[in-house]
Image 1: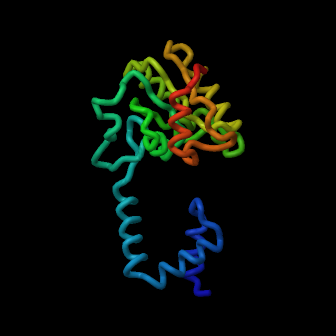
Image 2 (image 1 turned 90 degrees about the vertical axis):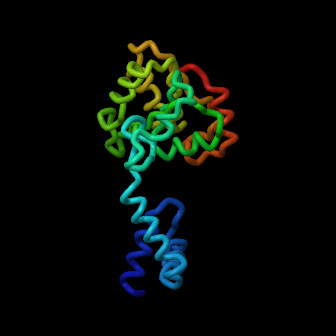
Image 3 (image 1 turned 60 degrees about the vertical axis):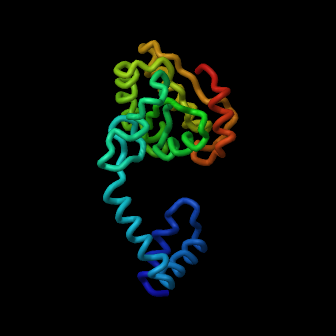
Length: 198
């Protein structure tokens, strides 16, 4: 195999959803159909690299020229509740459910000793500041239902204890040991509607 194609396969195999064989098929298709597949992909990757950023307020994906993001600046959204998620991609999943119309806050991860992700690496101080500054009445924890997600939820609830804000958590309609990004819109909608106090 030619070294550049092997390198392309290795890079593609690192993407979620790609195994070794699917990465090999994708790499060969890209090389075979440069004008139809590779060149538009290169342009899209360059555009995403140059323009996509995280919102300085909530941590969601946005463009550098739209900061704060549209969700943070939309006056029609419910400013009394903020939904706390692990990653910006989780906001996309929550929005696809259509059941939540409040604000968002991405922590940038979850507590994980194995990955050396401690509380100091999460956007907890920013969350506490927003709770006070923006006057949220409720913090909805939309975190994974695995052990690390549960530990993070408990830590966030304890961290915000002195603010007087009501802490809720998604109802456990989500599959165990699964993340928000892997849930379907109906499951997310039911989990939001049936959320419980933490």
